[in-house]
Length: 335
Image (tube, rainbow, N blue to C red; front, side, top):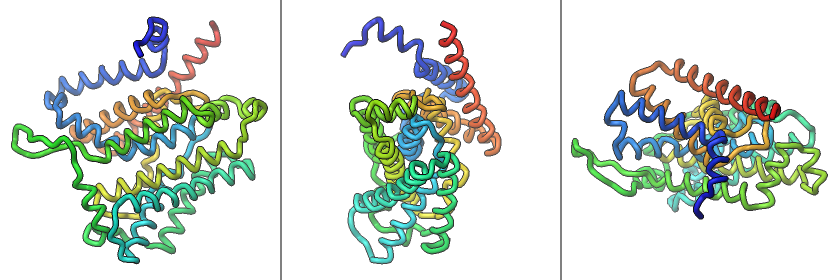
């Protein structure tokens, strides 16, 4: 479908257009600093670096559109993946990795439904529920499942095979091989599916309605409890899947992984134009936000910027994104 002039004008006034412009400007800046930036290998590395966070972002996006901030998704992710890995090692599992995805996804979904239950049943603020569930999960996993990392030598063989699965292999000027990891296609498949749900299904419209005005959403016939069950269950399932991708690519499972890294994903989602107070956001914008934040993060590492300055940068990105949204709303209110 060819975009009309009206749709193009509308796009130029959107948050996504601003993020796209910033992304292009930053890309040219880094390309000027480092000529190797504009290479196929660097492009592959950028796509691979958003793999796990891209899966996280799909769930986080739904929660923020719903009008909340989820701080449990990374604890759910590593908790589900660690339980799955240790459990399958105990029974001598030697099957395909799809089984691990399924089990971890179900465990993650159950953890997510715990969030939904507490929010809907007791009307506890989303922020409080998710940060509490995160601590409960980490504590229970380390107390009853294990508190030591599982090395590659003990991991199920399918995880090691998955970590070696690259497509579109090539050789660079130095003679070293590189390729696009299969997890990138999993991430983009989940993004497309999430975008389809939000744009073309009744549930997707309900997610936006719930974030815009919960009372109005209930009046027009939406069951808020079921909507929340879907949002947090889906986010939990994606977290579980992302956990298996993470432990497979890293060839180890560590129950203390991901601690304090939630802001990176939240920054990408908010930078992508998802309204922090709920009701607005698109998958395309989130993808741009992921690419922008990961590009900045990768290049900060290359120029050896200390990790605490990286956290400072992402904190500033969130503040700038929220201020930009507030200024846009104030301007539109005056029109």
